[in-house]
Image (cartoon, rainbow, N blue to C red; front, side, top):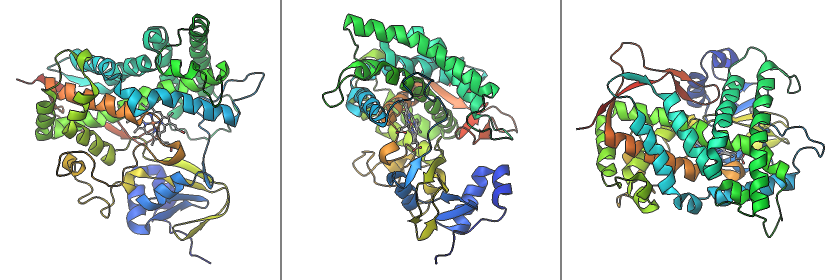
Length: 430
Ligand code: HEM
């Protein structure tokens, strides 16, 4: 009989006080897999993290309570509909599709830099979120985006309310005020989207955006049912800007704290066309250092720092026996700060992602977008948005933190690793 995984000192009580701190201590003191409490394990290093994410039959993703399918007479989407919906939207989200729309994305991200009020300390996350909300919604719905944007903001708000830490975990079926608010916003978004779907289908002008891809029949699955489209899009819409905004907060903070790195990004960005609409994937590919910087920030501060899986059967993980029904938490945060994978793992060093020829291809564990069958669908879009936003911002401004003894943000770990309340000052780069 194997020994069970070890429990770090302080156990669950310490976790409730400081989740990130205990995650680090668990990895340092207890190794690759540790135990938080009976039936709850944490995969802390690269090997077990990848194993859990890739063995999706043994470790299933717990269905997201974020925007569950609305009640309808035919029931929720079938497993086949889910696969079809995933395949259809990936036609619009895969790297080639993103590469074809860099000019549009760059136009949206440039607006963020243009609108940043200079010479004063500004709370930055709401500004960056509004800019990325527009970029993301436009990426999904093109010219129909303005009609959906106000509803997208409300969906985000519903998500924020739901993610607030609460003392009680209510059973899924209890309609708490936060859940009722979520459902109202989901219904409002769906009601705004439905006529757009009807119009596009009846006119035959399906569009070249992600919605257009979902409306096209596939040779394998045929036509995707309208309800499956309407069920999937609230979650995808919020995903296009929510996590990228958190990542952008961390990136802006690093531009402020590492002026030399910011200068190098600005030098690269000087080669971008003056008109952002003229930006192409070739320009994006040439921003090698900027891409490395984005990747390095995501390595150190993965917004999705803890992913949840459930063991479907008794199974082995890194020499430990995991009982059926156990929860396994996958921790990219500690996996990406492991000295066996990255030298000086706590040091901010974008160069580590550049090999000698300057391409950001150096192998190394990187789980910020997850991996396996549930890996991030929007990784290419997110990297394009964040790289352009970073380059355009550094090209225009020096960033600095407020001259105050207190930190310029609060670290939050619920609903994503984020720099809540982050304030920064932009001064025009000479
Ligand atoms: C910096 C930005 C982003 C980060 C760090 C990020 C991270 C992640 C991670 C770690 C997962 C895996 C979750 C798991 O395995 O449980 C994931 C899944 C997902 N992401 Fe992202 N994401 C980002 C941006 C985006 C964008 C722009 C989209 C837009 C479509 C998106 C859509 C999704 C979807 C739909 C899934 C679920 C995939 C599935 O369950 O099969 N993400 N993301």
